[in-house]
Length: 133
Image 1 (cartoon, rainbow, N blue to C red):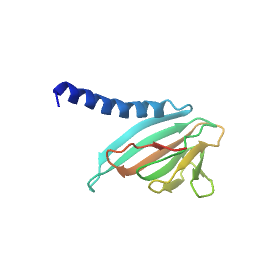
Image 2 (cartoon, rainbow, N blue to C red):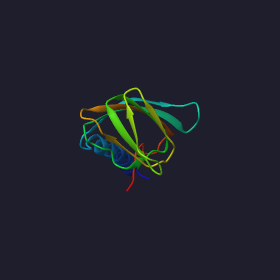
Image 3 (cartoon, rainbow, N blue to C red):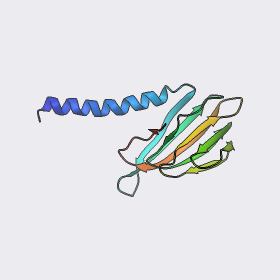
Image 4 (tube, helix red, strand yellow):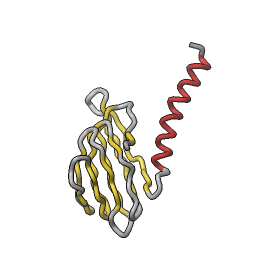
């Protein structure tokens, strides 16, 4: 393969990932701030930490992750709907474990901004957020 083709392929791969992050960042009423991304001692696994600020009434898309998530509510009230379970509302100081691959939605059910610290233990090299219908 010629160097220009390799460069073009690399740009497409990097650009594709960048587009997903931009789409997530521009979701109305939801703002993500990356905090940490590091390899774990287990090959092929990484930890990612993100602060997610959600405006009143806003909700995430239905999605899953290629690994586990711990959602810790920093402020406000967030309702989590995990596939196959009844909705649960958490307030500041409360946490929720979301198993690998479980579809879920988070919604701000309070009257002011809500924030969570999302910690993901995921398979490295896979998209962090997998949109679902």
